[in-house]
Image (cartoon, rainbow, N blue to C red; front, side, top):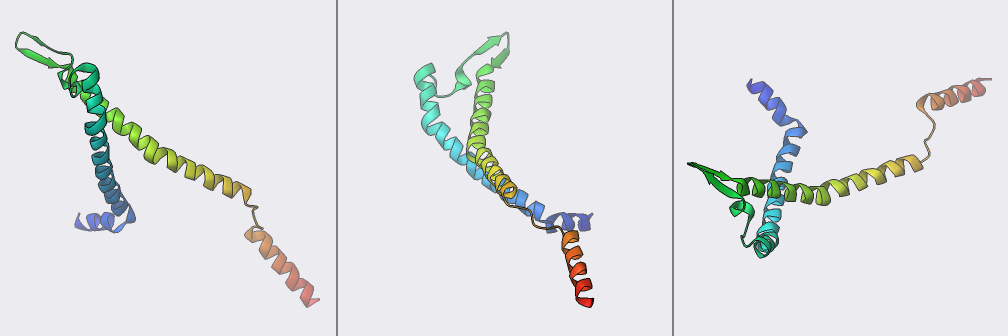
Amino acid sequence: MIQGFKDVIARGNAIEMAIGIVMGLAFTAVVDAIVAGFISPLIGAIFGEPDLTGIGNFTIGRGEFQLGLILQAVFSFLTIALAVYFVIVMPMNKLAERRKRKEEETPAGPTEIELLTEIRDALRAQQR
């Protein structure tokens, strides 16, 4: 079991995943700051509440339903998802498209078999 753990850690994937998690946390802090500094005041100006947690809440008997809490979580998720898409996914897709276009534009050289055939033919011609 310990050897398996060492094998996973020794692979580059574990390190890349750790870097991704750290960068994701840092990126989440930036998005949270944007939400707290800009979007929440905007929501407060529109709805009269600084966030969505106070909106749509009601009580039935002793049960307190907090729809605003759900709305706030969905809103936070969508905000982070949009930011990740526009800041990370879209630029990565554009880079991938550029690489693909460059590969398509670059003429393919002779294959290994074609080169070996040329070398064989040249050697035969020298022997004669």
